[in-house]
Length: 233
Image (tube, rainbow, N blue to C red; front, side, top):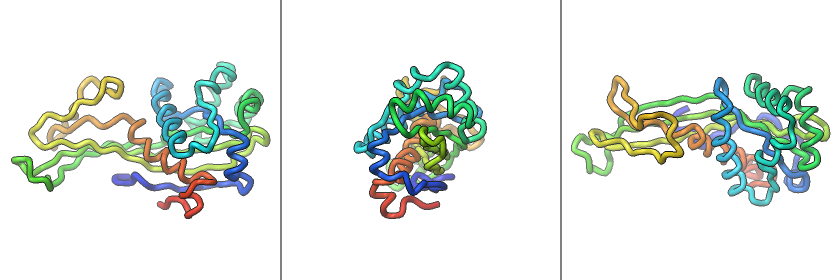
């Protein structure tokens, strides 16, 4: 997945899902989950999705997850998200239970899942010539994200796609790796010792997912990317 910052694969797009129906129906963000991870990782992912979607498609009325969650009872929210985390699709029973309260806010409901995460290390030639060793050490985090949109009036899947994103951090060999801001630290140390040397710790998954969310936003009906044929694998 290295270098796949701008890749997308739209797997399903109902002809009835148009830019106008999205605008008039509104889009509710139900949640973003990550395979084999605890619920605590979800808020940064939701924040990244909402931030990118709002900036890229300001024409689409979005109901944020912070407003969707309170209208769902605890069991419905927990098992709907858990089922999507495990299977990559909404369980029909839990979707039906969630649909009733969501209908009061939006016609369409979005679920997303980080399906794969990869960390990579590499050494590259320092093209600037500022380092004594001539080597730049790079740490990259690559992700694949699946996104599904359901029509809560018909309980059908109207849009689905896979999107790839990545984030790289680099520093000159022999120098201290850059320190991540406190709110982005996922580990105690900012360095990652491998058999090849000492590299920067990878950026948080949410940061690596931002390009994937950008490609999703561009692939929705009504965007310039969708009208031009969208992304490609």
